[in-house]
Length: 245
Image (cartoon, rainbow, N blue to C red; front, side):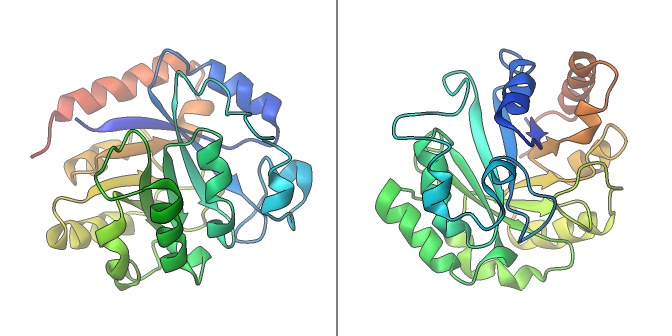
């Protein structure tokens, strides 16, 4: 069964907690978009509090030793790291309770190091205890699939971006992603696929028909008149498409 994953863009911890409170007890997974203002813009929390040039040691101020993400006992967190050199901060988010780390392949020249660090420091291994830690690779519409091919053996899922300019909710869906998914799925039929950007009740049927496993939904939820009703509509739509082989 495909899964609905609400995505949160936030400029403050207070706003993050308010949005999370609306999701606790309703969904099991949530994605937090982390944008540093360098890899893409505009910056989100915690970079809005620390500045776009903050390094990993500065980010550790947000979560002192032992501090965790809100409601970490009730939600599974995926961090979508739209940041330059994500290998510098993956550890901070894992230690704060995140269980899924999405790294954009265009954001670093050290992807092998990032993968190795996750394996050595946090025991990540593909398909091993996915409830503890999963690694995803995100790829832009304009990026050739060949860029991620060397790293798929270590990845648990691939995130296709459904919009042209990442990091900004509310952009129109780019149908080119459907062609890209079909091309990828033909070669890697068993790889878990999720799509982030432009996902709505109008675009979801085509994505589900293409065999997408996880729908990451942002503005379609947060701009709805009634968040709970919109979540239910997505849930019903997903149930209509059933289980994929």
